Length: 395
Image (cartoon, rainbow, N blue to C red):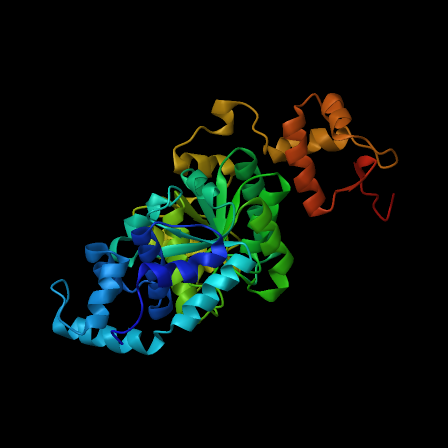
């Protein structure tokens, strides 16, 4: 195994599809990071300690040499080599890098200026790198962000709450983080996009392909206007372990986590647990006491000290940012402003967003945010001619 080529020339050849020329040591380090991605499963703290101590290239060379490593016990090193070395394949790494380039996925490491340093709070369990589809520089804009997560089999109530929270927060400049899944995740992403806000979908499989497949269009939309992120290489399949480990990234990237709906044993509680372990603020939305999909959120409030979340202002308080009352009407102030926008629309005549803003006495930015949410819930429709209220069956 020690014959594996980690030289600068081999590294540059493998990295060539990205179209960036790296200096010799930078190329070796980046390539070695991609190799580590093929060898380990997310959250491997033994590998994390090696890379933190020696760097990706030197650490990999030390593992391949067969000798001892001072930072590991003999047993840790022996078991690590048994896990990692069967996966060592230059072809697999090259294929992942080629796929990434073809799909517009960027490999982001700690050496890059847009590495989100809040992930380093995971210490030895932090990801070695991120594979990002979309504008990787946008990762720096998640300092003020909230994870909105919850049940895949969500109720109409849960979807509605997730949409309103995401729309008002994203419209007011708070980035929305979630996992791209059905249910609450999807509602949060769609609503953030509808108001022109920033959102990130963190996937358990490779960033080159959507999971679930039914969310292909949604994930593509997130990639165009936000970021799709994974810590596993392109071509990697989502597994149960990777979903659980993905949840720690959702919690670490976000400044706070809000669980909208969750069953008693929901995976969203795993995300909440990671947020609590990182000392990140945690909130939960209450629901009907008869609803199984709210049993988990009630448990978080009762047993784990989660803040009770009933509005976007509650989330802003959780984040320590100005509330809508403090800051004046925000672009996503949907609940009251939705009525004003509807009053300015007609069921017959198409009206431009500028005309709606004039009639409602609101800013164009605020109207654009509200129109996006109203369209999402089916209250309005749009065409090249403008906007109008959707006619009901009785009207």
